[in-house]
Length: 153
Image (cartoon, rainbow, N blue to C red; front, side, top):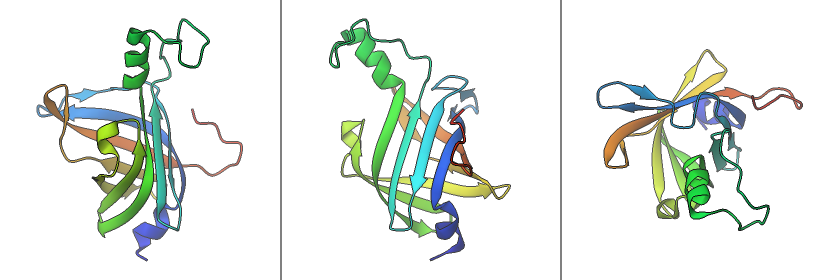
């Protein structure tokens, strides 16, 4: 096990997430104060969730009661997946996805560039990905959770 493999084990809360376009412009896709949780265990399992907290509530309390517009907005304001992980090399982690909110990601492997910042933060970024026909790099900064009663905010 490498030092980075050992270091990432635990729970991480989202500090910041944004997309960078090909001109270097940053966009807070999930809003200014997104919520997120990233988990890695020492058995090679992982999960990630990111949510835009300002999502509009469904007009119905029924579990499946959102209008088409509400469902689209809810979907675009949430990202989640889980599976296994392994390192291709010291700075490149692969998420082997078993289940995801995006159906096309199920049974795929997503590569992420990963580095440690200030000994308590992870910076994870993607290769360029397509969003509505344009290419962006997704960048997320995660801070290690330390206390059992620590807030996600």
